Picture (cartoon, helix red, strand yellow):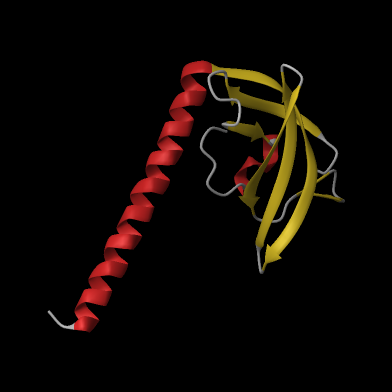
Length: 120
């Protein structure tokens, strides 16, 4: 097998492993939230433009007095016609009782802009 073919094979294996990991992680997270999810209130605290049409929003929520800050990918969205990323607005958050770092936020009508969402 030539060096070029070996390189393509390694890239293919690496890509395949990444996809399996990503799908497994999303399935695992969704399963945890369905199994032992607890609902609380969270707040969007930041919204950043990354590149072209890619954005990241950050939200916080509290579990037993401990603050959790999570970020997720999205495309551009706004609330009330002028609030980019709904910064400052409170939403329902579901987190895993067994692992509170696993969570998802319900952006209501803006859920359609989320990328890689696994619950809402």
